[in-house]
Length: 215
Image 1: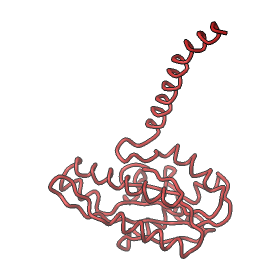
Image 2 (image 1 turned 90 degrees about the horizontal axis):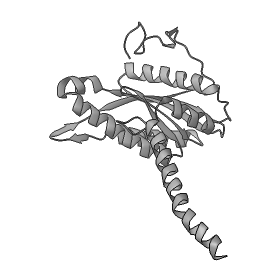
Image 3 (image 1 turned 135 degrees about the vertical axis):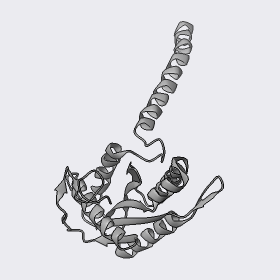
Image 4 (image 1 turned 180 degrees about the vertical axis):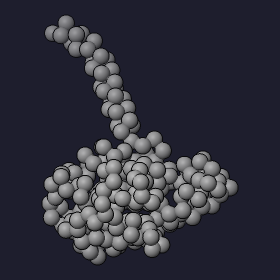
């Protein structure tokens, strides 16, 4: 009996060491899947979470682009621009978690989220809440910066399949683009909306990365 206890006691530190090692490894893997500047998920892990979320139904897919971000970078430098991205990421993360959702930085000043929404009234309330969050000034060193945003939303009440995510994101992106042309804010598309713009290089014509006008 005493021999068994001795063996067990000797094994405990080793087991604890492996537990700590596994925890650190998981944290490193998760950190590698997050955008280092905003702290949000990058596109691939975001899409994994978003697809699972859509299977529950009553969700809103949101695509966001900051307004005036290029001017901030050009006027104050990339350090200030990075501060804006970091603060936007923190605000978007809080908002999405409060709404049972997940958020990502897609690249540059482009973001996305999938949240729980149970009615049109709920959608309007939570999007107005997001607008208030994102339009609040960003303070960095001796700068006080005001940043606008444009967002497109697709509200889906039915349970969606994983294959629906690209269509929903594409439609939300097109609505965002339309909103951006008229001064910013947010607007929702119909649940059964289909992409209207032609595709260039796998992206909406007019979006960054295509031969059209930069969005």
